[in-house]
Amino acid sequence: MNLREKYHIPHDAVITIAGTVGVGKSTMTKSLAKALQFRTSFEKVDTNPYLDKFYADFQRWSFHLQIYFLAERFKEQKRIFEYGGGFVQDRSIYEDTGIFAKMHFEKGTMTKVDYETYTSLFEAMVMTPYFPHPDLVIYLEGSFEEILRRIQERGRPMEQQTPIEYWKEMYDRYEQWINSFNACPVLRININDYDLLEDDQSIEPIIEKMAHILHQYRCLKR
Image 1 (tube, rainbow, N blue to C red):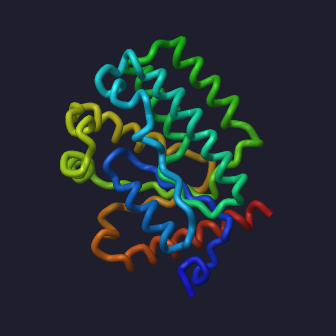
Image 2: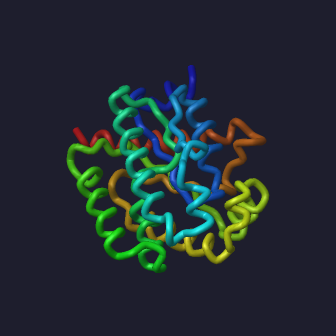
Image 3: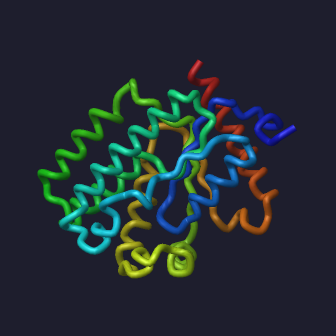
């Protein structure tokens, strides 16, 4: 019996992993999908035509990058649910507007017109009864010092060259965002409570917690 069957995780569940850069979303996505025998969904970083340009010039490319992410994540969310679920997803569509676009507008690296255009598109596409929200968001969190260490050790070159102040700003905004997030249930997991690279078994307590929340959520939806 696999862990999905052991804890009665619905075969069509959609689980989204959220958290700031460097917190280990990709590792969690892969480990959880393997344990549940689910498919994975990752953001397409290597084919993103704006990412390198954005890190070189936030003000010039922030709007372009956010529109690109919005379109790609919307298409991916639609594909996941058309497939019938059974996915673990690396990063949510909600983070783009709740954290990134908002941060660039408030910091002056996205104009008011661009921000209003972006948020209008987001609300029309996502904040409707017809948009398929995930069953659960797993939010990965830890100390800023630990996350910064991971970025400096494992991050992409463009991330390692980004000023520390940017990562601190993002870290704080993630905490504000998750405290008010209500599109679906949230399970908060501290990154010091498991080690998926060294201990495969550390995924099981996470799945057990997931199961409890999912069962409660599905009962409420009936």
